[in-house]
Length: 297
Image (cartoon, rainbow, N blue to C red; front, top):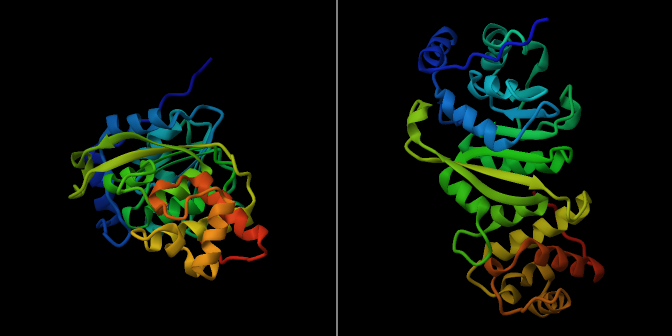
């Protein structure tokens, strides 16, 4: 009887050798910083809580550092990579470093901001990714919106963005990303990552954020659209009271006050004091008044 051998993970030497082979020069445009520390990718996988029953969606696998660690624990990994050169090399890397798990790996060459369920060969149950910092929040929100089968998400982002995503109502960093992420479930900081584990070494710290989906508001796309529009309006002028900030969104300040009172929200409060449930009620009050609103993601 034979048992599968765990994948070998990439270290600094392997990362540089792969980059040299592919003539890859990490670019700020694509937000490329490759993790070369095995303990770091193991820690990310452990924080994600994935297991053998999970089909993991990984965004921006790059040279495959995190991918190999994911294959050690997940039932399957589906990687989405926008860089064609990197995507083409990944299957070979997996075959070399994780031959026993190669059958459990797929790579799709696509833009994560546009990828849809029909683009993937398997339906993901979890998201684990080192997201490109320049598009981290839009990618995260897009994937949570379009892939309701994702029950948990563990993403590495810029530390400041991680703080904003996990912020609670009332703080100065609480804002649009904080509220929208909470529409999908519980959001929490899951750790910090230093700069020294990357090549090239970035100038900023990184943070881990975990979302556990709750579906408290169902999967109604229209409800999400209305709620997100209310959130955007409230924080577009965050120093104003909700009555004033929502005047354009509601039609008039008086109409905004009516919606706020219907939703049991003090019109003199600011948006940073409200949680996602407040915004859902507010959006519902506007709908019940027979006023539609524009899309927002």
